[in-house]
Structures are given as structure tokens and as C-alpha cells.
Image (tube, rainbow, N blue to C red; front, side):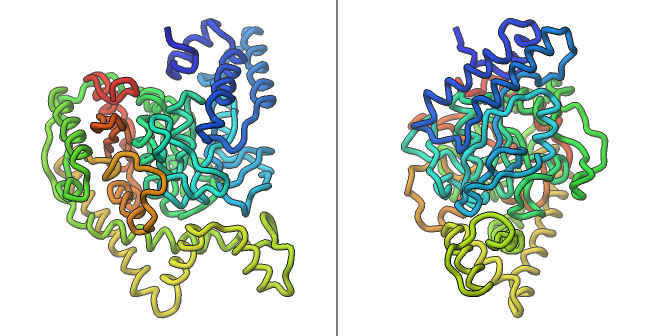
Length: 484
């Protein structure tokens, strides 16, 4: 018999409504899991036992009084530590914000609170979202719960690890170039990077504003759709959030996939992809074919420029966004300085880690006089070409199927060369540059038993189709944490 922390969100929703157990019992079960596991795992940076139990008790009182409650009432969750929750420490995985307490909540946190969800705490991450392994947190690394000698991915590594370990039923992370999708793949869970503009970024600490997007990490596809239902939609405080009717992301989950065309971009299945990963994703294509979809090979020639374009654009935007962390208004301030310039230099030198400094320097360089046209402008032009290639691809297929990462989870310290680490984003950055939705889910395992992730990429605002394909894949016997 499965324990409470091994059940899906859909099962919890039904059980809470039927009063099979209380919100307080469920919250305590997950808090107990955090106590038992997180000393070794390191997924959490902040845990809120008193606050979460009090919130759960309020939900139970309202239910006992016969009040009609929102769908997520009583469900525990956690936030990546770059998403604000009023009165809860938010560090962004950085010493610069080690003691920062936000005076407001992110739009997504407000929506979840209004839905009755119970915040358990904040999750570890690569500093300011800059990393692919969670080794760049200023506080401690997070381990992969399926293989403790391996990384959980990044930058939302704490989110994926906590969900995979059963410490929480769902988490909200952020994705700039793969930071939801790659950790989900490494930890064998499901992650969605929604269309850019589908979810408000108000209250998300900006890394690269034209790329950042908040999304859910869950144990299965159906649960993921449930959470996107709760957080998607227009927010007047985020001018980039789209004013459009938000669909019910669960409405088409039971539709079959017969007649749908899935494109396999030949450029992404090259030698850079590990043979076991390539085989697992091609086997996934065969499962879709068995379910009635048509598999075709397509070309995305501009993909060759995506990685370079991404690191130029994202670093340029990071250089601009992180200029606000200056030691003057909030965050870390150097104790000794003689003038304003020295205050800036010492505060930023002491507060930022090596990877953040590296990207600030790169971004400042590509935006500087004499280099803007040579690098930043060319990268933006490459981005336009990548978008056009995707548009052409969607003229002949409904969705694209690719690996999430070139390899399965790697060992701690294995990728010391920054360029080697950056190359791990080759499969995920194209969808980020184009602002497209992309669903990451497990599709198989390596010979060592490590999960392999596949990525479904769709047109803008095609999340319902991606979820429909994901559920169909799970029905065919793939995609769950149990069977990979």
C-alpha cells in the first residue's frame, strides 16, 4: 500500500474532498518526509512547519464548516527560491540575498494561496538561476534522489529533487534555457516550460527577462496540467503576460493522438547526444506511433546557432537585471569601503559567486561599445531565424519530439569546464529563444538505471496538445516514475 507522500495530486484532491484524511495530516506527512530525507538530499533552503500546519488547519476548519473549497485546498507545495512569498526568506541561492525577506508575494504564489494550497518552504537552486547542476548554489548542493552521487540538474534542481523524493507533491520552478525541463529529466519527473507570457513573472527575480518563465514540476502529466490551470493567465502587473482566455489544460487529456504528426529534428539527434539517450527518445517515438501518431523527420538548420545566441542574450539581460544588486538598497553590503564605487565593487565581489560573475562579465562585454553589433545584435538576428525555422516546422507537424539533455544525470564535479556545462543546454535553449511551450517527461532509462527525459515542443499556447500527448504516452506504459 502506498503512503500518503506516494500519491498523485489528483488522488489527494479526491481524498481530501472525501475527508479520507485531513489537510493537516497530509501536510504533516510531507513535513515528516522533509525531516527524514532532506538532511541528505539538500532540496530545501527554508522549511515552514508552523506556518504550513496553521494554513492546513484553516483549510480543515473551512471544510468542516461545509464551505465549498478551491480545487487545490490543503495541498502542500514549495517554491523555487527566486519566487517571492511575502514574509518568507528568499535567497535566489545567493549570499547576496541571504537574509532578504520580500514584502510581497509573486502572482503565482498569490494564486496558489487563493486556491488553498499550503506553502511548505523554498527550494535550492543554482545562484540566480545560472547553472545546470545545482552545484552553483551558495549554500549547498542538492543531490539527485535517484542517484545521490549525481546532480539533480539545474537551476531548479531543488524543485525536481523534492518532487522525485516525495518531499512535496508539486513545486513551481523557473525556466530560462532549460531550468525546469533538464532537472525534471534528470530526476525522472514531469516539468513544463509554458509559452512565454502564459504565466505572470511578477515576483520572479529576473535573470533574462525575454526568456524567463515560471512553470510546474510534478510526478505525472495530469498533475502538471492541474497546476498550470491554477497559475496561468493575465496579470496587469506583468506587461508581458498575455491577455487571452486561459484554457482548461485538463480538458483534452483523454483524447487520443491518432492523426497527429510528431517531428524529429535531425540536427538534435546527432553525435552530441549520448547513444542511450538517443535510443530512448526514438523508442518513445515508436510508442507514439503505436498510439496512432505519425512520426516524420524534419530539419531545424538554425539550431546550430541556438546555444551561442542564448548565452549572449541571456548574459546581456542578466548583466542589466543584476545591476540592481549594488549593496545600496537591499541585500548584502560590504562592511568596509571608502567611496560609492568601492561599495559597489566590494559588495558585488563578496555577494556573487563565480558563475554569476562570469555571466555578468560576458553580458557587459557583449553590450559594450564596439561589440554590441558584433555579438548582441547578431544573436538577436539568429533568434529571429530560429523562430522562423520553428514556424516552418509547425507547417508540416503538430509538435516536435527531442531529448531534453544530451546525457542522463552526471556526477558531481564531472563538468568543471563552463563551456562543457553550457553545452548540456543544447536541446532546451531553442524553445526558450522562440518562447515556445515545452514539456519534459521521462521516457526510459540508461543501462545504469538513470532516467532519460524527452521533450515535446509545440506552437505558442499549445500546452493542451502537449499534455494530451504526454498522457497518451503514459497510457502506453511510459513516462511514470515507476517504469520510466
